[in-house]
Length: 65
Image 1 (cartoon, rainbow, N blue to C red):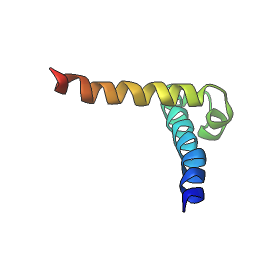
Image 2: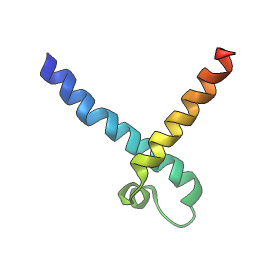
Image 3: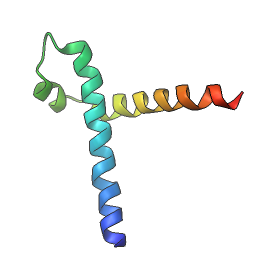
Image 4: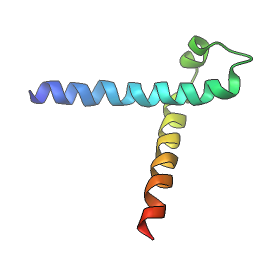
């Protein structure tokens, strides 16, 4: 069971972040590239993680005050 959970976290979470970053980038680049081309480009992980941090901070920070 531990192997399954560790494999799940090690493979699913980065894949989800990459797809989220590719989707955010595709919203800006849809006229120039298809989604498959954006998915192959670099920086999808970083943009997905940044987007996730921004959304979480928008949800959490107003509730702290």
